[in-house]
Length: 322
Image 1: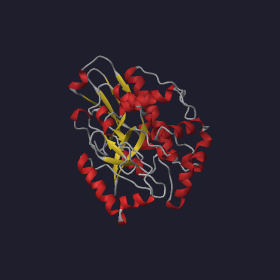
Image 2: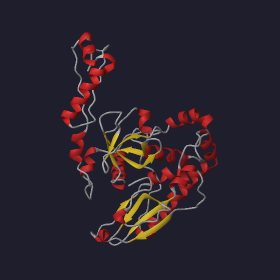
Image 3: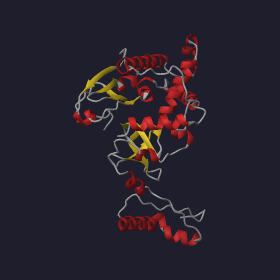
Image 4: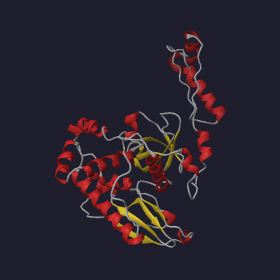
């Protein structure tokens, strides 16, 4: 699992394409829809459509049911991005806020697409310009939606409704259902909030601690959901979770097949914060020592005794708090 996506059942899929979350699996075959993520993100892609491949896997032969995971939102990560120049960055960021959804980035991207699609054809380009959104990317996104709908109807006889039941401004059961679909599509990319902002999120598969990307819509609401799924890890000077959406904790236990990590053990590792008061200013200053030398020593000994380097102690003398 890395920036290139997920390899299913250790089958070598072509590296030139990015496997999105749109996957349909039958008795003896699986379809993987490929986009070209990095080129799309940079705005350089001139390809007209997705590439759909069929691959075979013995593990996919088990069971009679056809599992259909449709995650159009994840495909939008490739197609939809906010267009800005560095001089207009602040303006673009302000325009983005109106579309942000409290459940995360995939819901935010769907909010953008839903509003754009509802507009008359002749108003869409102007709307994109006013909201600092790439109009060409939106049209490609719509083309891909049509292509997916045609594929589902042709291969599986499944007709996608032409109307929206989900309203980004009104919480409903559809939010919960979409979260389940997102989790099922990205079950390999689960992360848990560590309990401390400095440590960020713990990736379930690797145990590494990673921060949310600064442009995540979750940060607009100052939220750190306990459990999230992400599209991929971005490695620059630091590592970030990109395209992050919140999921329900209980849904992790309902996954089929079950996740490869122990959900309960991860939950037990989450840091808990305890607040101690009533010590007095003089005692707290002695506890910390000059330049916090005593405090650093206390923290080192506690970490060693508990065998946990994540433990921290913060002292607020003015507020009489540890």
